[in-house]
Length: 315
Length: 282
Figure 1 (cartoon, chains in turn brown, red):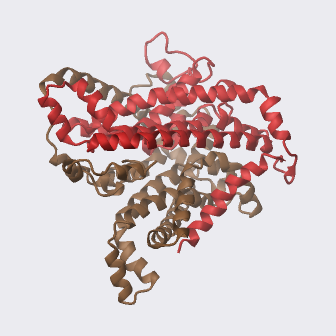
Figure 2 (figure 1 turned 180 degrees about the horizontal axis):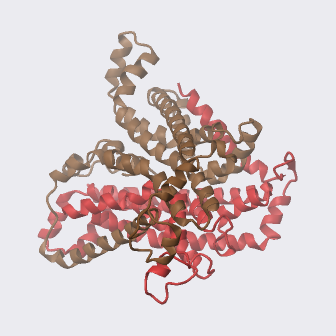
Figure 3 (figure 1 turned 90 degrees about the vertical axis):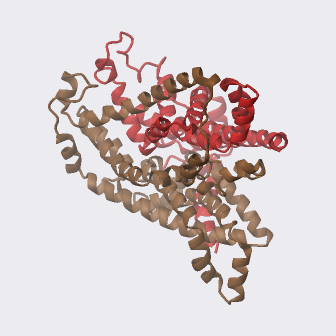
């Protein structure tokens, strides 16, 4: 479903200059695109513009209200929540809910999430860049076939394979370990990652490969000193996208782990809500804390995150 | 070079895909080892279990409902965000926020907001609001569609935004000179030019909601009422709560089959329209 974008490439020169060369850079380049464009305003459109504006603000309200609600609620006691208007901040704010969450092993679960995310993303990136290099440089039918099979993988829904994955993990003796989360998530992250990186590596001029070969560089040298540096932007977007996926994933931990030792954040939220029961502010404080790292990342690397999220499809 | 990727992908994605078909012919209750029982599971799930068909119907409602909600909102939002006014860029930054929350986080948030005892129904003075939104079997499906849309519209909005930004500005300029209004431009330029984005986004939306699990599980407290027990959830509950992994695998295979058919169908659709669009673009 991504290949068709290339066929629509030769539109007009105008479009071409606006269009980023690869999907990965599309988001990052948005800033420049913006400056090149003329403001699209016209007299006949005034009426629709107002409607559009209204719609835009309305959707903002829909998006913000729940987030506003969890933030203000996490700063009150559960008595306060029931006694006062829930949509107004407490007149008597407290950080007790956050302390309660931190006292209940939050940092332990947080560490687990960090380990799983980093390990998964590191392996995904190395395995995918190697595979992408092989696929782009391979002249045999095998390389093409391999790419087709891997592309097929994008369409495999995780949910539908969870039962055999569970069986496999059990047989391997990995049930209820962090490995049980890392290994399958690597597998499911590979197809999209390979696709994005292949699209990028393909744009490296063939002469560069040739000249390195002439200089006597081996496959490994070419990979580390040519492909890796050139594919850096793609690796970045892939890394961000997969990190988001792994960080927030719920089904794998739900099915493949059990003990609190190896609990990751999304599952911990689920457990907290059972454990804290009617102490809703504490549960919502956990929700806020769990989203905080991504929020901070979003503030500092918004462009990259937005680009990373749509990299595979955003064309 | 490709070996590590192939190994991971083969062992933990490709083999399980075949494995789920194999297990669908086996009796397995987690504790023992799986036993071959032929077509027994299939017969049982398809013919002796009326709920399978109910779940399929619910899934169709959920998928179509989600699509009808998400697609127009995401499209309009994408067009809106692609506009050049400054405040739109600012709003776009905020629209992204739901994507930073895990499905459990979103589920717990809305569980609290929709609670009959506190949350929205206690805070706002509307008579129709105090309702057990998540327990009322007439309402719960629509609440789910809304909450899942809340999560995914931002992503699809981004896809459309990127799509709109690739439309050549000259087309709009020419249309403006010809006296075409904004509405006319939307229908004769924006919409046709977004064809590929529409197909990509639609595929992701339809297949995505077909296999969607997380939020509904969380919102219903892990015990989905029959009113929202769509197939993925039905599979999970059958497999990991009732420990009937054979039945659950049958449901999983059905899901994969519907999902692949849907993707292929949409792919064919995009393939056939490719040529027209090349002409239109030239």
